[in-house]
Amino acid sequence: MLEATVTRITSARIPTDYGEFHLVYYTNTVDDKSHLAFYMGDDLAGEDTLVRIHSECLTGDIFGSRRCDCGEQLDQALQLIAEEGRGALIYLRQEGRGIGLLEKIRAYNLQDEGHDTVEANLILGHGADERSYALGSCILKDLGINSVRLITNNPEKIEALEADGIKVSDRVALPSTIHPENSRYLMTKVERMNHMLQPPVHRSRPRRVTSLNLKQEIEDWLNDRAASFQSESRPFVTLSYAQSWDGSITTHSGEPLSISGEESMQITHQVRSLHDGILIGVGTVLSDDPQLTVREWSGSNPQPIILDSQLRTPSSAKLCSHPDKRCWVITANSEAQSQGGNFEVLTVHGDEDDSQHASLDAAMQLLRDRGIKRLMVEGGANVITAFLQQRLVDAVVLTIGPKLVGGYKAVGDLQPKVGNTVLDINPLYSGQAGQDLIIWGELRYDGPEK
Image 1 (cartoon, one colour):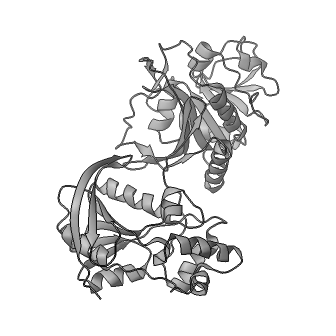
Image 2: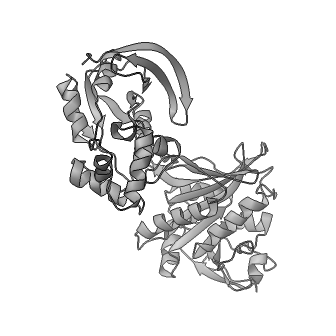
Image 3: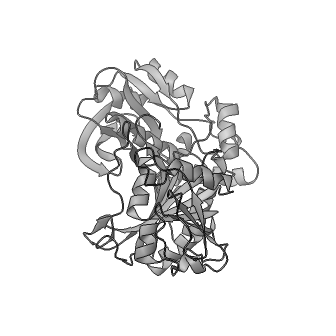
């Protein structure tokens, strides 16, 4: 058997959603396949480089198959490397745990007949796992990497690298999202292949969703997140609004601007129907005079709520003639009285830094006490910024219309009282709705908690 060696042929810069990587193409003395290194950082040498050895899985990596967790693991690894700003993913072309794509497809059919992933391989005359990591070790050495923190759930990878002289100083776990299509596959890896499965998390791959299942994907995702949210002090909060490509929600403050197309508006109404309440600021009432109903979707209207610290909501507002709900108006003005409109005034104490503005924490507790477990926040800019600044947003569903407005931004200064605030949306999903782009995900915050 030939000694495993690799030869670096060429490399190129690859900008990605995670940041800028470099791709290196290798030939080798063992097989006729092209194996790859995908790395970030100028100098990979030194101690404890973050590394993932990833075996090719066309169905999971490219097509997003839910039969396995390979695509999710690939993207989690790239996210981890990007967050660190330094590391490498070695992409070994050993499809189907080494049996090849054709045999893997045949194994899938056997799995559909009731066999687990190990049994299917054995029935086809293969080993349970025919992979080798020798070429991965060779590529690591070519990159100058001799000590790694290995991103894996598979103890055999650790043993293989250490046998090749690569020090594994730590294992970085890759939690897998469990769902009906992959649950048996994941349990088989644990029970028969000694993989170290972590509890599921929602750090999923950035994935584009087709228009055919866009609405269902968003609904399932939101329901899943909300179901796992637990707090007696506030509702689960979804921030949902529309902006232009340059982040504008209007040309000038106080002026309405139509951004969403018909298809994305239907999704907005669907998202509304998934919540108990929907909240906007009084500025949005005065400029847009919205109805906040689900008229474009078959569902129940959420409870309309206006954040109006000084009770400026006019009795002529459309929300005051809501088809089936009496609007709630949250104010910090204890002496304010309803001006005859069809709304109920709810008073909370003022913010500790500005007594003229209603405390968001107090408003959230009030809504939770009144049975609002899921709250959708639609705007405007001051309300959006305040919710983000105070870390009260759990999920985002953002519509981006194909316009350059150069106007009033949806999000203002996000400097909180202590530390940093929003880092990014994670995971990030996207799909096309007509001409608009829909993006959704969880918010990930930086710095100390409130």
